[in-house]
Length: 143
Image (cartoon, rainbow, N blue to C red; front, side, top):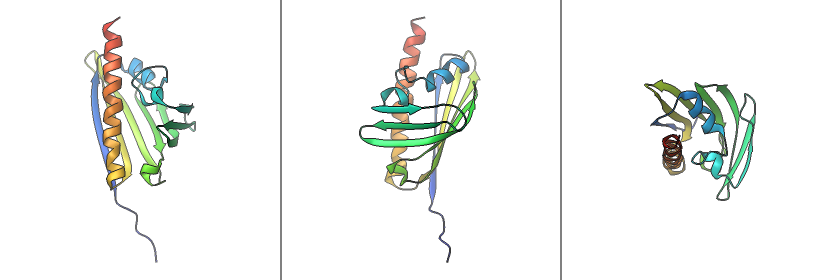
């Protein structure tokens, strides 16, 4: 008897940022930049290159994964595992597309369990994207 795969969901969020894609891409991966998830880590190991790993501890919850695609300035993709994915691997893809003089940043998190823990990722990613956008636009305005 084969086990059928669990039902999964996908979350897609977008933000427009008033800066060029290369700048936004690099800021998203830089733990020194306020607003991105890496910046708020209690403990962080981050190697943002293909086959590089990350370990991100925040508020006592460990997250980890492996980068599968890093293309400046267009796309970052990595696996994502946490207790909220029930220990199963999911996938995060972030794209940075030129939109006028700014960037359309799109985050897609796929393969999440179709339950409250999986759906909770939408709130988490909205929190970080909102903070990143505010912090980044604030920094851009000061240039």
